[in-house]
Length: 161
Image (cartoon, rainbow, N blue to C red; front, side, top):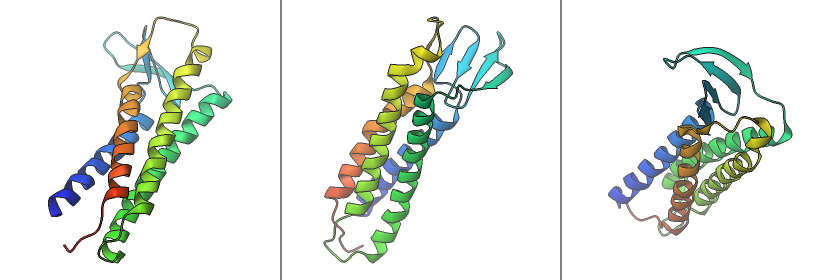
């Protein structure tokens, strides 16, 4: 049981790190001397050093992506906190429903954010010489991992430690 708890805790922390990195790092779109993320557009030199950064557009779709990414981080942190609370307060045989619910919500929020960004980013960048950056890919990787950990929380029963 202890190894299972450590495994699910490791998975949850990995999802949390992926969510933080994908929300903060300026690598959602990369190409042609520019990097963009949810918050700013940056011009880079040939060596990769950042030269100028400008605030991102105020489009409604971009604000919804920003909000859902922040919500995914909040829900995942809340799920981790609730997991520790439930670990010490649940009776034997109880399930971690609340923790699983918030972790599944975090997964659905990051999926919504990445899907909206995928569909609408072409309105923001008319230049087609770009590729998706690693932060965008990390957001998509965080989605199934968050859902998986949420489902594991729902299935998991508390036993004696």
